[in-house]
Picture 1 (cartoon, rainbow over the protein chains, first blue to last red):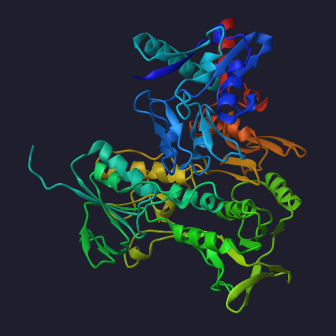
Picture 2 (cartoon, rainbow over the protein chains, first blue to last red):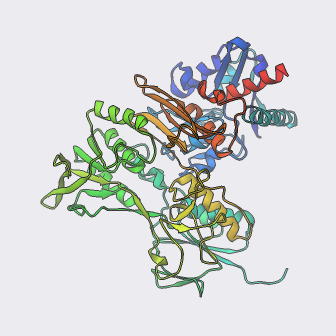
Picture 3 (cartoon, rainbow over the protein chains, first blue to last red):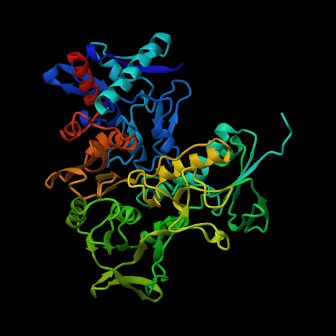
Length: 163
Length: 427
């Protein structure tokens, strides 16, 4: 069943445990700059917004990939990077309008939030999110509606900032 | 439905443009016949991967794009190892190297480009390679094993990536670029200097503003490169990456209009009816300047191929124009350049540039009438905002609240969300 990483910014306390959990799981170190989920901190506004890959239906990163190294898991509908196929060209980095796929030179492979599919399919960030700002849920109607509302907001945001 | 003969479309070239066209055709027409002609033998591979195979990021198989099952799934015929020899636009046939003739209803020329080998003495010595096919990359890979010094002639994207691969293989590289700085079509002199200094710091040689005069041989093998200045750079392997030219020999004898590439309209149609062109062979229009350009990059080949394919299948679609962009890393330092980064006219454009030489970061944004039209990023910002800025440029977003929205710091999605929240809160 399709799964979704649901983010509730209003519950986020900016503890950034998700960043530590993510970087530990995927890089073996506590290093927020290597985390695939980022908590955007705006201390002056008391606003904390975690962002991660949205697993787009039409994923530009996957479409542009010269070696088809970014594949969608048919069960959960999340995308993961196949390391033996990724040549490290960064076309995906240029393509993603959200900056959600990155490449660190020392690893040389693109990486993005894949809901931990490349390890065990059990998102580590969610396990360590005490205030439940992150949830990993079946994509039922309610979640879908929420997503649509967020997507709509995003679209308006885009217009607002860039109109 | 009237029983009409099914259409047959022929695509010459099985890389980004050709395969993108095939997928576009199949997205709207499951019935027509499609044949793809590729002069290279299977497996199909991506040229984007060549230098990353050389640097050890992937094995040779990691360069592969599609397997045989792909063409079955898309119900298309692949003729691999077969070249187009001649096109007869009147009879609408393509003559192939296997002596067969293919009749077409629509033809897509997506035959890509080949390496230019400059007419200098010694260019045919053993140990001298272009770097544009899988065959080249496999040969360089073998030759590098016993080499200690490598010269790369030409520091465009392929040259600089080849040089970076040599560095990763723990060899000493010497780069020869006839223009005043490395990556001349990709970055400005300020950004280029960061990379030149980094390479020199690591013990490599960068010679700019000078040409290679001759490749010096010893017993038929390359032993060095003599520059016009007289200096000799010793090497056991020399990689030539001075440029590419479109593969269009098979169109000789036709009246097709070409300059640098085949002139195409916004539907990717050439001057001859029923013949389309996409990718490195197509001369399109720059989406900002409106000038005729050949922008030989993977993303635009995909875009052009898609537009060509849809039009071939009878679905009128317009190409928005080409946008130059490139990205790579040299000695671990990332770089991305987007759109009109090269303009210097401070009246027409507003140019904002932040350089930190110690940290080796550079962020240059170019605005025209409140619209972001170009950018160069060096350093970690490539990860953060190259994609965001690219899409701002491509979609021609304007920034009425002032360019400061972008110049204040890296544009990350979270910041945009926050700006929106605050805007909503104060309304």
